[in-house]
Length: 250
Image 1 (cartoon, rainbow, N blue to C red):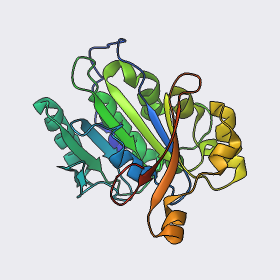
Image 2: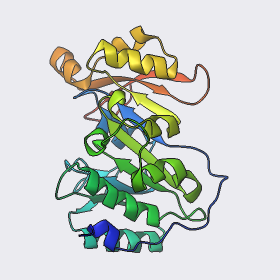
Image 3: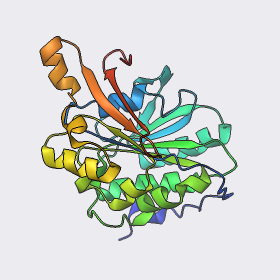
């Protein structure tokens, strides 16, 4: 039996535009490290953007995202209809898909296929936030299917992918190699810190010294997440912190 995503017969994206810059972002940190708060408050997903969320744990649906309500649905048909209508209107929106089966490969593939079909290199960019990526994938090699296509080919169709996970070793290399900006919070182990340091040419001690929002809430009573923001270019690293409750940067 064909899956629902296969039977939708979705179109391909249109108007390839290679002039778009590579802007994919990853957020990596252990539990309580502030990943979702970074998505919400840092502005890497612009306030006035068109944005769509793969939201298995309802981190966005039913709440405001930078002042704009993020509507959510678990219905595949309703999600396709709402996203298509929102893209046609051409205005800012925030829409979340809440997968009924949770963070699984087939749910991510459905979401990715729908988003891929909405790409348009001459229209407004579509920011695509994927929570719990590592739970959905079944390989650390090449990411296949429409999810992989979003990372490899989405740029030229105005699709900007933001991927969120706890350990870089658990996600396909397609995700890390295609993402030009890395938000790195406190990780769970020295092996995680070493992997990140090796990948981005960082000092392992700088990563190991980061304190999570969870730990700081216990220590100082405030959920302050310390992080490194690493962009393309040698030495292009910012060391900052974020109040995960207020959204204020320190």
